[in-house]
Image (cartoon, rainbow, N blue to C red; front, side, top):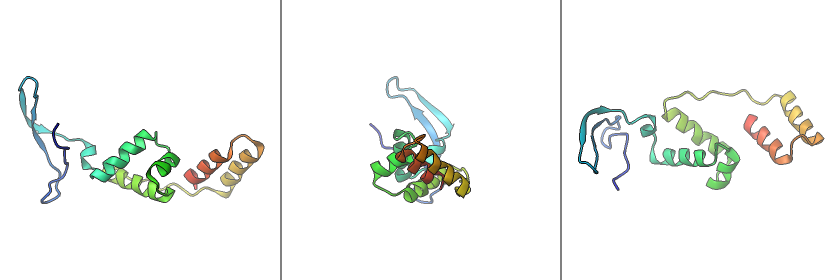
Length: 125
């Protein structure tokens, strides 16, 4: 097995370009300019986080447990990955008092359990 692909030049940090592909089975080679895709922009740490995020099905509470990190740390790392992929991080408005009270009311009436209430308050707050 080969080495992992790096997306940035180790000397100047500019994006690298793939210029040759090779099939070890039939010995065919193709030369040209090939895009590595957005994931090549991620550092090894960011890529590991993204893989864990997918494995945890995007559930922040599972990421917290698996990585032994706090909610704010999960959010910060996720935002780093989003930016590294070339996207903007949207700032979500804080949870309003009305929405917070609605979640607590759902908890009080048994519509949701405490774990779901905590998740909603964390995710939206």
